[in-house]
Image 1 (cartoon, rainbow, N blue to C red):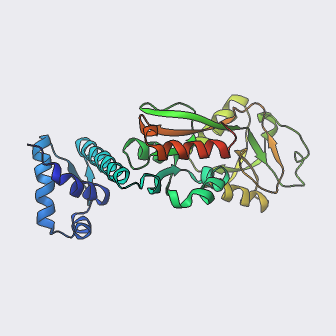
Image 2 (image 1 turned 30 degrees about the vertical axis):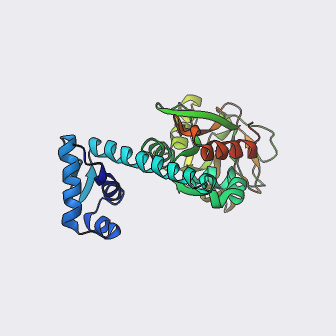
Length: 283
């Protein structure tokens, strides 16, 4: 028989991956928590966690059980809230990256802060948090649509070159990749999707530049441009007082809303998506 009563305790353990911390949060003893996790593992027939070095990590089966436990808790919470007439008061968990929060979602967050709980991370984090049920709605840049999630296009921006006001390109209406040849560049961190895209562009255009500094996040990159360290390529949604010139032979950047299939059956999620689309003029 599946010990469903152990699911809430396992969910806390799965989120903490520490028996001491999870047991304290649950107000039970560590041995009692071990028993609950063991019973679930016995019911599944496979380990739910393992040790990697000094850390505990969930196995694939453990992640599946945690996802089921989270969805079960959400459904129960939604059911009880509807019974109590409080459906509209529960918070939607929104996940997005730094750029989306700073340049796209400010108005929505200001208006809807009491209805939102926010998670922040990379594009990979956003997709993972939606898939495993930590978040209900996400906003991020996508080049390829992820499997298992529904997507709605929100807004598209050109990729732009940010330079100092006295830069030779500052008065241009548009530039091409070839115009970046020989420039000092402020670059995203290695491995960042934008960095990979720029390296592909450099190779295709047959140009060279010097990496003056590597920085994480558009605000830091723009700050280095202001300091005269070099030029930077950023999404056109970035707002700053420096010249921003569209790069016509780079593909535009498209932001999407993402959610698990069936998530819009929850009126709170559907309403929040509508609010985001209205604020960005994408309805």
